[in-house]
Length: 272
Image (cartoon, rainbow, N blue to C red; front, side, top):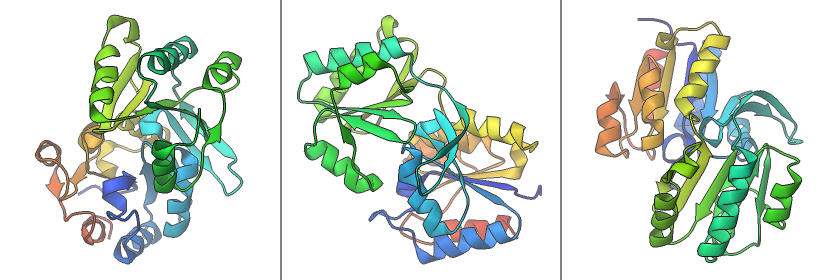
């Protein structure tokens, strides 16, 4: 068996429990694997800033695959980014989506993510819910004006709304005029939008090449559909017990749910 040198894990529903907390067993399992020579990479739809506190709690210096692969970087307590790779949404398309959603579905929450920054038009219930989950508040601004200024790359857009609205936006973004985008639901009420070709798996492949590692040297953990390609890319793909059946079927093995010490158990077997 090839020695595991790289551990990559999704966060929500995988690395943290249903309360968004790290289990003590998960922390000790990751730390033990790192002491034995493995590197830990966090992979999430979150911005790097929203992942840094998890890295701190784990006691690791983690490279972060953020925005589902649109940005690979390291960040610090001062929100200073060291960018390794990125793929932004074309600026004209970001403007077009923002304008379309604001006009046709004004009840929807439109969120723009650029590097470590998160921008919204106002601070309503949807934004408050998301802020509670990732641990920091957005900047409230005129989104159309911010996009026109073009001062930062847009790494991700997020539309939050009732399921019927999210479905309508998703259907609209399937038109040929938006073929440079990938849109998918991470929840019934969340539509994530990134540039075409952006995936956690693509970011992982780049990291492996840069570190001169084969896929066999990586182990990946995930719980949802956007993790499937990542699980298939790694030498060992591990689905959580709370994952949908299709995700479990794509993995090499299935561990416990995220509320139990399954990650520690797997790392103890493969990183020894």
